[in-house]
Image (cartoon, rainbow, N blue to C red):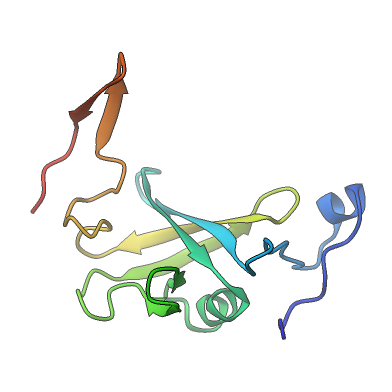
Amino acid sequence: MTPFPPPLSGSAQDETPELRPRFDENGLIAAIAQDAGTGEVLMLAWMNAEALQKTIETGRATYWSRSRGALWVKGETSGHTQEVIELRVDCDQDAVLLKVRQTGGACHTHRESCFYRRIEGGVLSFTGKAD
């Protein structure tokens, strides 16, 4: 049971002042973490309704781990926390943007961002170093 009202139809969803997240068929919504200071995209993760609600309530980024099938508070074990400075939804509320104050690396590889490889002519080049 989701704590959020269901999405509206058509353009009504784009203009509503109510939070009505549009979760996918697996009950998930894409969550993009962005450094609040620099604007750098740090990571893409997933949230279910409970993770989104906990993020709103606590101000700490909480995600749904698809591999573990459990809630995951960012930094709970690594210490690499994400304090949520601002939380946004896109136009039709099927993605959320977390502007965060990141402590430590955001990526499980210990890099600042999960987007540390650039595609150039079909070949990957590394742009960031691990700690």
